Image 1 (cartoon, rainbow, N blue to C red):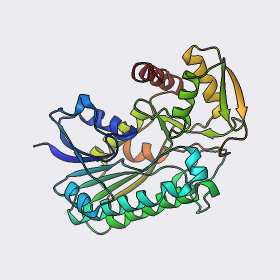
Image 2 (image 1 turned 90 degrees about the vertical axis):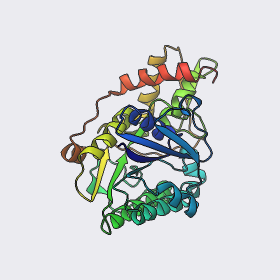
Image 3 (image 1 turned 180 degrees about the vertical axis):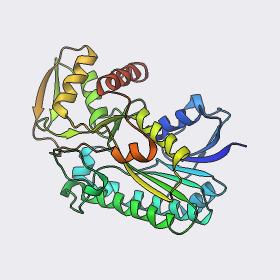
Image 4 (image 1 turned 135 degrees about the vertical axis):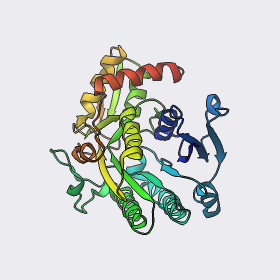
Length: 320
């Protein structure tokens, strides 16, 4: 009999890619709550996924959703881009703290076997060398203070519940994820999606980059992330694991823009607008622990990932 998987956030970016991945695996029967983003029409009648509307900030809705589940993958979140992180940092704190606290409690009370929680790398300091899990020092850069400490709190809550009962937790500190089903929106997307949107919609032979282009991030194609999740569900035997997931390479915004322009085939010049929000930062993650624990390594090089992402964008976002 297939295991029951609650896939929270299945209509979002990471969640949609996870959904497509696990629909290929007949081991799971998937239940997918959604709130503001409606289910994709092409999957609504799929025989192995059931979509249902639920507000994960509501204790009763969470309890009902979790009851009877074997696996819970928590990819639901209130998200947006660097503009909100700079100008409205509270936007990433309250709802995410509430929904995850309720989910973890319900998973414990209903003795769910496995929980996968997506953290991120915003708690790490800017540095030249790839950061390891133990490099978190408690010093979070000011502009990431709210979202960074919220993630740390939820990581610790995962570990707390892993010590109380039979539920195993996998916490994934992933780097910047990109690929199909991203928002590709200048206001709400992270650096990759926003850059693709700028390049593909640029007018007048130029693309405008916020800041000076020196900000650098570790960019991981989404299929590599879903690979890690699948491996963790098969391999993990310990109550709690926390791993970095990334490529180990920091790519500057300037280099990213140039690579996307080259892959797009467009003839564009780059202009820098230093009046716009930007977070001067350099980060790459050391994924050695993910390799040791799960045998995972990234497969998709950035140039290949850009090509794949642009191919998806051209088909699915032609009018943007």
